[in-house]
Amino acid sequence: MSGGTVRVVVVGGGLSGLAAAHAVIRTANREGRAVRLMLLEARDRLGGNILTVRRDGFVIEAGPDSFVVTRPHALQLCDELGLGPRLIETRRENRRVYIARHGQLLPMPEGLVLGVPTRIRPFLRSPLMSMRGKLRALRETAKTRVETEGGDISIGDFLERRFGREMVDVILEPLLGGIYAGDAFRLSLRSTFPEWFSLSGRGASLLRTARAARKAQGEAGPSSPFRSLVSGMGELIDTLADRIGKGAVRLGTRVQRVERKNGEFRVVLADGELEADRVIVALPAGAASTVLASCDGPLSRELSTIEYVSTATVCFAYERAQIGHRLDAAGFLVP
Figure (cartoon, rainbow, N blue to C red):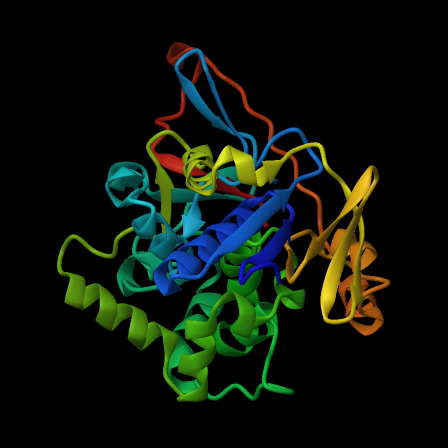
């Protein structure tokens, strides 16, 4: 610590790193403490997986196109940054989703909220599932106790025990697994949907809870669980970067390792090093494992076991006359 000033280095300029840097500055200002912050990013741009391209009148998301409001942190961050008025939902008239099933696109039943039925008649009339599968799903109100092993369970296992395997395979797994770009049977319920984990612990029915929430919201029904920004998700990155300031950011700077010595940290770069009182590593798990290997062996080894899946985003633009579909949905999912 130099003259009472806390030296903080943030490794990684994706959304996590930017949000962490913003939180450090905000907390220091609120507490009247001096902080010298440096954010290091290996690429030549900030944002990590978030990249918004604006071209020929289109707003094209090369990465995530929205965030889920059931986890409130991104919403709170937008409010802190004054971006609340810039938030947008999916259009109500285009809020349906199709499922590729039996060689055609079939609409999801009306009234599904994160895959949970809030309207029984549309669900029973849907051709997506067999009648046996639908009736099994509706018996969820009597199957509210799901034992969690070690205090957690996968989304897939949890939902299969609640709604049955057909409901999971046809509707829930492609929808919820798609949100997190992973296998629902390997994703932690507690980490991804903590409110469902909490309801399960209390023995509450997801069906009854979702229907009660819809009834409380009136005829308009529930709002979309997704939000984005008028100019795309890149607007959040640009706003965070402005708040942090260009002087606190170094692009094209790859961190080789973080070392700890005498209560301080040394951040080793390809062309030098930085000393710090605090280091925040906001990298993908594999990269974080490498950077922290000499600083914390057990943590590095644990990080190295975290698996990732890859996704591809491909964007096309067509003249409207070329498309025969009504385009009345956000898209379609393939189980």
